[in-house]
Picture 1 (cartoon, one colour):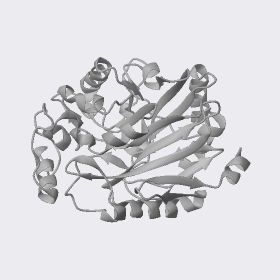
Picture 2 (cartoon, helix red, strand yellow):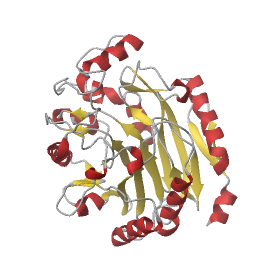
Picture 3 (spheres, rainbow, N blue to C red):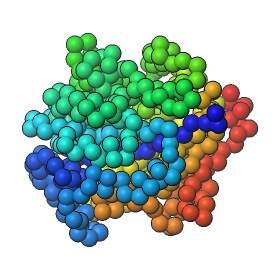
Picture 4 (tube, rainbow, N blue to C red):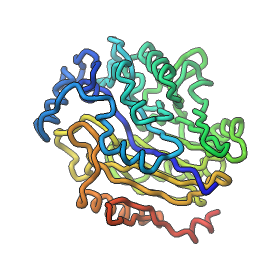
Length: 376
């Protein structure tokens, strides 16, 4: 087998304005300091880029990404779903509460999503009832999930995705309080919730490694999908780098899929394994909102890593640049792809990585394979 290919991306936020343009929106009332109607986010997007016909078809929000997924045909499709899927009317008093109507679940099945990671700071926006309905809706749609559950054991358990050749992709969902996840959201004995890490210490690495060892078989690929850090800024905290490397070196993890930042960050290849420190937002309803424009949070990437199933070694990483416009995913323009290329080269330089752009504006990761081999 020449390798398996995954699809990974940044945060997928199908609540609030996105939910409102789909066929079965929840009630529009929200509880933010300055906005009380989710339809206002649709109005902002329309003011910026033109009127939208509503309701849209379930696959609309993925836009050009659907053709890219068909072209690449990845073996497993994994996203961080940063919203509750519920009709609950009891929001947590946290200021921003995302929810999507369960009858809009077709927007996830339309893209063939195999696994939703739920260890994030929005899945419990509508309380435990909202979490239960989220889990039940995903189960009914035959979409696997990781990082949250009805019990502590379930929250820690990986999603298991079988792929051709007898290989399995194991997705472990991990959440850090640094991303805004409240400590009370952590699953515990007798309490549902998310897989919230106590810290990023060596002891936590050992605990995760023990969980990986219980499940991982020869030929399996283990993905640690972790929600960590703040929304803005390119700096990779030393603690994050140490933790990600330890997951690879000591815990049996083959790929680290980081998210929470609203923009993509630099990439590392360590011991021939891929570390995505921050994948940015892939789909949200921030269109038309000012602030932080220098980070180009409207730009994203479809990450298509190809891995050796016998070792988890990175064989290559193709990336398709995207832009959020009209509340959907669009292919980035030539200039936008060049901006992402330059950012990856600048931010990847400390790790010895960068990007190369082809005539179709697609990117490929470049890295010093000699250094990667020496790390091993």
